Image 1 (cartoon, rainbow, N blue to C red):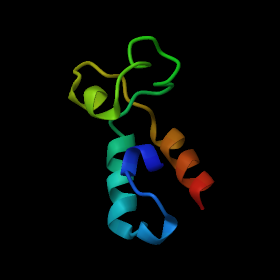
Image 2: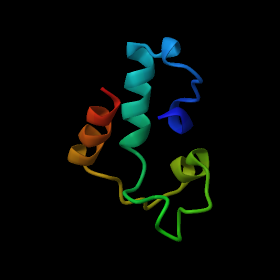
Image 3: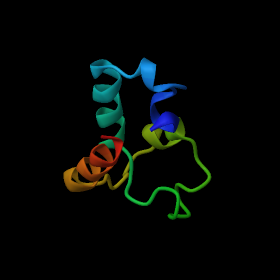
Length: 68
C-alpha cells in the first residue's frame, strides 16, 4: 500500500488516496514481484509499459480487504 500511495502513516489515508490506490492497482500486473518481466521495475515504469496483463477485480478486492 505504501509503495503505491507513497504515504508514511495511516493519518494520511483519505478517500482520495484509496481511490488512487485502486486506480493504480487496476493497472498493475498480477504477481509483479515474481514475474521476471516486472520484478526489477518500479511502479511508474510498469505503468508506462504496454501489453501489461492486469490483475482482476477479485485480486484488488482481496488487497483492499487486507487493508481494513
